[in-house]
Length: 425
Image (cartoon, rainbow, N blue to C red; front, side):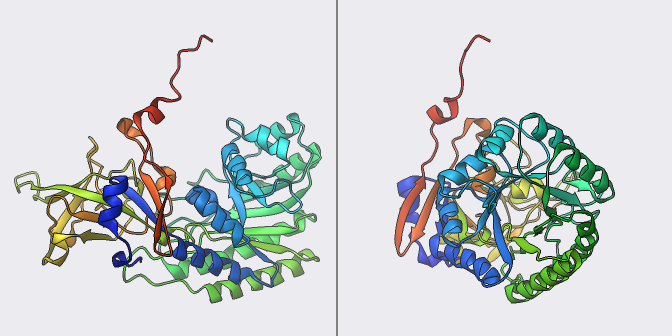
């Protein structure tokens, strides 16, 4: 967790307005470097899934650390190239992973010779019809896996992602018929709610690929996607990257022996490099109460100017984020408080669980005008923010060596309306 005393939050809030995201550059670079160090001097390679946070500031840090990119849209491919990541598949610095080609994705993959990681069988036909002539990778649904909450199904019968492992032979035949060489295999099983589950699923995944490699003699790399766990609670356990490196090296040895030739292992750190490097800073506008009646118990609501249009994870998944009060309320005796935002939606609450129930936090009661900080907002914060109710997306500020830089200004109404038109079709 970031030390809030490091930053002049009130000064920054007056300069850029609230809410805003603050990114700590030292933390970002340290996490990227940890991932790079876990692969240094080995056949392992880190691939950053830029959907977590695609800010140029973050992409620059990933590139400087030597990580590759996993993109999930045509625009993400273009954005990665603008940030200096090379096109082409030798090596596949940018990989395109998806279950559907949408918008410019198919054209971008073909034009720039990007390695496509196929998640649905029909994508092979689309690539062939579009004139693509390069190799492909295949994303496998291994039949198991989920994220930090059950709603995040990354593998198994309820997951839309990838090709069911029992259907791989049919897909291999499709690829051969289209003239595509399968050079990579990929699966994503999620971090799981417990750290031990992540390691267990990684070992299970190696077993799945050990079998599949017999059917794909051209495979040069296996991507053990999963996302390194990040502790979202103050008392949360940090993940041992040293142990992870050992686990991945064992996987490389096992799979290379099975394939009869060297097989490189790609790791996907997921949210790990970016989650902890950012906070969402909001302004408290009021504190109000509901009373207990026959419909339930009352609550004390802290109203803030940030909502799920800024950070949707608590509303979407019931994801937990630590919350701190900055200002007069910080020194008060903690009491149970519900933190809620400005949107005309009952779900616009930061303190709820994955069953959509309100779960008050023990916080010092703030006063209107105090700042409130939502921690660990670097992954899927700004990246999933929206213009719901015509609000502009929040500003993003980077903090480096005691200096603040505005890296994304707050959107205006003109920004929100820019794409509206009245063109005859």
